[in-house]
Image (cartoon, rainbow, N blue to C red; front, side, top):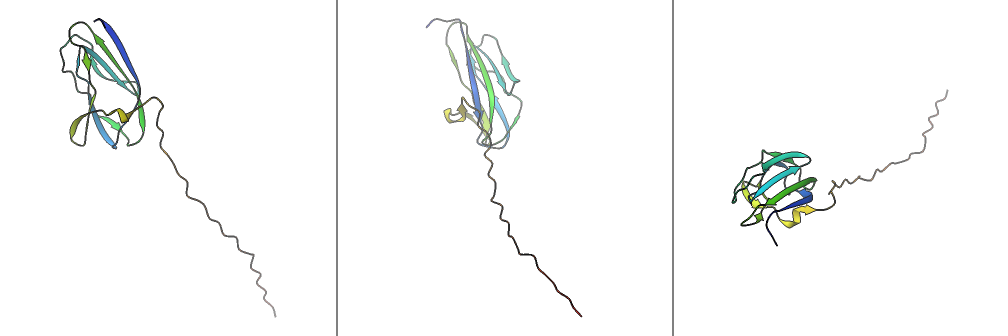
Length: 126
């Protein structure tokens, strides 16, 4: 493997919580991270690790959002990681959070019960 390459990671990411999530993508060298077409991280320069933390993004548990992470290498070490801040701690995003196909919410419909009553005939007379 030689230096001087660019990699694009693309798919869907699903958070296990509902609420604000921040992302962090330290790398050697450059990174750009998009979530649902919003540009969250722009560290497109030579560096030996570290990087920017994204602004908070509202996510819903179990609902995926499309992401793209660009990474380039320009000599020396070559690595990239993706973290998220959930449950009050930084965690590497686990492989189980990624998918190629979007994950949609599951909706269930409760069965509707109808009762049919016979018409009531009321007779009044004199």
